[in-house]
Image 1 (cartoon, rainbow, N blue to C red):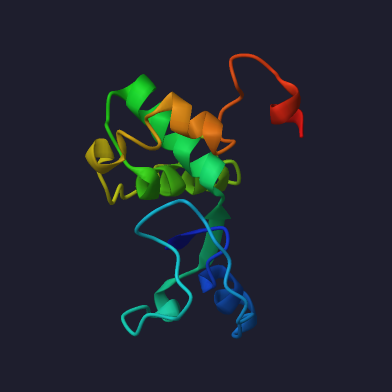
Image 2 (image 1 turned 90 degrees about the vertical axis):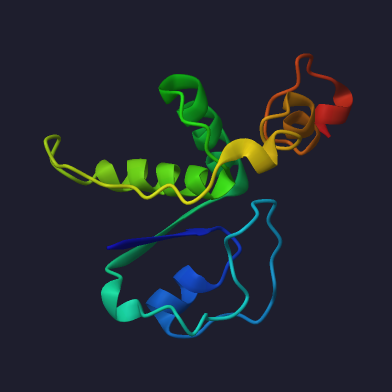
Length: 134
């Protein structure tokens, strides 16, 4: 089983080092990422933890919606991105199951909004300006 987490969360660091830096980091993705180890998480069943950042997660979710017609949220985007990265290490005929934990309905005004995505640096602006470069 492959665990998936957002960059900035402590779970991957704890999985590999059995300790974590108490400095909290921020991320835009909602519903995943922790600054503590949940009591329900049993790392004995996890073989690896892969992380994705906000941009990778949002773009993967938008791609899933655009190309597959499956309207997913940011957490699902994180799972999709990490799953695709993991699949690069497997033989081409391997079957992989990726659980998609959320819907895109709560994110229409955020990750499915091009203006919000540009304002947060996740999409390139329509026109490159000095403000964007800085």
